[in-house]
Length: 143
Image (cartoon, rainbow, N blue to C red; front, side):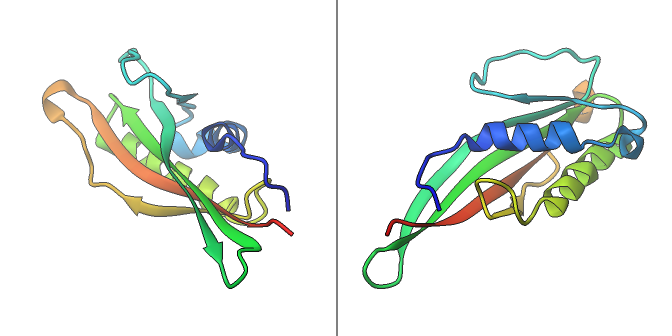
Protein backbone atom coordinates (compact mmCIF):
# COMPACT_ATOMS: atom_id res chain seq x y z
CA UNK A 1 0.00 0.00 0.00
CA UNK A 2 1.22 3.50 -0.75
CA UNK A 3 2.41 5.93 1.91
CA UNK A 4 1.37 9.04 -0.06
CA UNK A 5 -0.68 11.58 1.83
CA UNK A 6 -4.10 12.20 0.30
CA UNK A 7 -6.53 15.11 0.65
CA UNK A 8 -9.34 13.67 2.80
CA UNK A 9 -11.50 16.78 2.40
CA UNK A 10 -11.28 16.56 -1.38
CA UNK A 11 -12.11 12.85 -1.32
CA UNK A 12 -15.26 13.40 0.78
CA UNK A 13 -16.35 16.34 -1.41
CA UNK A 14 -15.93 14.18 -4.53
CA UNK A 15 -17.83 11.23 -3.07
CA UNK A 16 -20.74 13.37 -1.90
CA UNK A 17 -20.90 15.30 -5.18
CA UNK A 18 -20.83 12.25 -7.44
CA UNK A 19 -23.17 10.08 -5.34
CA UNK A 20 -25.85 12.59 -4.31
CA UNK A 21 -29.44 11.62 -5.22
CA UNK A 22 -31.58 14.75 -5.20
CA UNK A 23 -34.74 12.60 -5.21
CA UNK A 24 -33.96 11.82 -1.55
CA UNK A 25 -33.82 15.51 -0.59
CA UNK A 26 -36.95 17.10 -2.11
CA UNK A 27 -35.29 17.20 -5.58
CA UNK A 28 -32.70 19.66 -4.30
CA UNK A 29 -28.96 19.19 -4.59
CA UNK A 30 -27.10 21.26 -2.00
CA UNK A 31 -23.93 23.21 -2.60
CA UNK A 32 -21.19 20.77 -1.55
CA UNK A 33 -17.93 22.57 -0.88
CA UNK A 34 -14.63 22.29 0.94
CA UNK A 35 -14.15 25.08 3.45
CA UNK A 36 -10.60 26.18 4.12
CA UNK A 37 -11.52 29.66 5.37
CA UNK A 38 -14.13 29.71 8.13
CA UNK A 39 -15.05 33.32 7.34
CA UNK A 40 -16.54 32.45 3.98
CA UNK A 41 -20.10 33.63 3.59
CA UNK A 42 -23.03 31.79 2.12
CA UNK A 43 -26.38 32.73 0.67
CA UNK A 44 -29.59 31.96 2.52
CA UNK A 45 -31.19 30.75 -0.71
CA UNK A 46 -29.69 27.29 -0.85
CA UNK A 47 -28.81 24.18 1.13
CA UNK A 48 -25.16 23.55 1.97
CA UNK A 49 -22.89 20.70 2.89
CA UNK A 50 -19.54 22.14 3.98
CA UNK A 51 -16.57 19.84 4.56
CA UNK A 52 -13.45 20.87 6.45
CA UNK A 53 -10.39 19.17 7.86
CA UNK A 54 -10.39 17.59 11.29
CA UNK A 55 -7.88 15.37 13.06
CA UNK A 56 -5.10 13.33 11.43
CA UNK A 57 -3.29 10.50 13.20
CA UNK A 58 -0.74 7.79 12.44
CA UNK A 59 -0.20 5.00 14.95
CA UNK A 60 2.15 2.01 14.69
CA UNK A 61 0.54 -1.42 14.65
CA UNK A 62 2.26 -4.41 16.21
CA UNK A 63 5.90 -5.05 16.90
CA UNK A 64 8.52 -3.77 14.50
CA UNK A 65 6.65 -0.72 13.25
CA UNK A 66 6.17 -2.16 9.77
CA UNK A 67 2.50 -1.10 9.60
CA UNK A 68 0.67 2.06 10.59
CA UNK A 69 -2.97 2.82 11.29
CA UNK A 70 -3.50 6.00 9.29
CA UNK A 71 -6.71 7.99 9.92
CA UNK A 72 -8.14 11.34 8.90
CA UNK A 73 -11.32 12.81 10.30
CA UNK A 74 -13.25 15.47 8.42
CA UNK A 75 -16.15 17.57 9.71
CA UNK A 76 -19.35 17.71 7.68
CA UNK A 77 -21.47 20.81 8.35
CA UNK A 78 -24.99 20.52 6.87
CA UNK A 79 -27.10 23.70 6.66
CA UNK A 80 -30.48 24.69 5.28
CA UNK A 81 -32.94 27.52 5.69
CA UNK A 82 -35.87 25.49 4.31
CA UNK A 83 -37.05 23.39 7.28
CA UNK A 84 -36.05 20.87 9.92
CA UNK A 85 -37.56 18.16 7.73
CA UNK A 86 -35.21 19.14 4.87
CA UNK A 87 -32.26 19.16 7.27
CA UNK A 88 -32.85 15.54 8.24
CA UNK A 89 -33.29 14.53 4.60
CA UNK A 90 -29.87 16.07 3.89
CA UNK A 91 -28.36 14.32 6.93
CA UNK A 92 -29.81 10.98 5.86
CA UNK A 93 -28.44 11.41 2.33
CA UNK A 94 -24.94 12.06 3.69
CA UNK A 95 -25.27 8.94 5.87
CA UNK A 96 -26.48 6.89 2.89
CA UNK A 97 -23.45 7.90 0.82
CA UNK A 98 -20.98 7.27 3.66
CA UNK A 99 -22.43 3.81 4.36
CA UNK A 100 -22.50 2.96 0.63
CA UNK A 101 -18.82 3.92 0.31
CA UNK A 102 -17.72 2.40 3.62
CA UNK A 103 -15.40 -0.13 1.94
CA UNK A 104 -13.13 0.13 -1.03
CA UNK A 105 -12.69 3.90 -1.11
CA UNK A 106 -9.34 4.63 -2.77
CA UNK A 107 -6.79 5.30 -1.28
CA UNK A 108 -8.52 4.71 2.04
CA UNK A 109 -9.88 1.31 3.03
CA UNK A 110 -12.76 2.40 5.23
CA UNK A 111 -15.11 5.37 5.56
CA UNK A 112 -17.39 5.70 8.57
CA UNK A 113 -19.33 8.19 10.70
CA UNK A 114 -17.56 8.32 14.04
CA UNK A 115 -19.75 10.69 16.01
CA UNK A 116 -22.50 13.15 15.42
CA UNK A 117 -23.11 16.43 17.16
CA UNK A 118 -26.50 17.49 18.34
CA UNK A 119 -28.69 19.54 16.09
CA UNK A 120 -27.16 23.05 16.04
CA UNK A 121 -30.20 24.78 14.57
CA UNK A 122 -31.14 28.35 15.41
CA UNK A 123 -34.88 28.86 14.88
CA UNK A 124 -34.63 32.60 15.53
CA UNK A 125 -32.78 33.10 12.22
CA UNK A 126 -34.35 30.09 10.47
CA UNK A 127 -31.10 28.19 10.13
CA UNK A 128 -31.21 24.44 10.57
CA UNK A 129 -27.75 22.94 11.03
CA UNK A 130 -26.22 19.56 11.81
CA UNK A 131 -22.57 18.51 12.08
CA UNK A 132 -20.95 15.09 11.97
CA UNK A 133 -17.46 13.57 11.84
CA UNK A 134 -16.52 11.26 8.99
CA UNK A 135 -13.45 9.08 9.52
CA UNK A 136 -11.28 7.87 6.66
CA UNK A 137 -9.05 4.95 7.63
CA UNK A 138 -6.34 2.77 6.09
CA UNK A 139 -3.41 0.61 7.10
CA UNK A 140 -0.05 1.50 5.56
CA UNK A 141 2.68 -1.12 5.33
CA UNK A 142 6.10 0.47 5.08
CA UNK A 143 8.03 -2.71 4.24
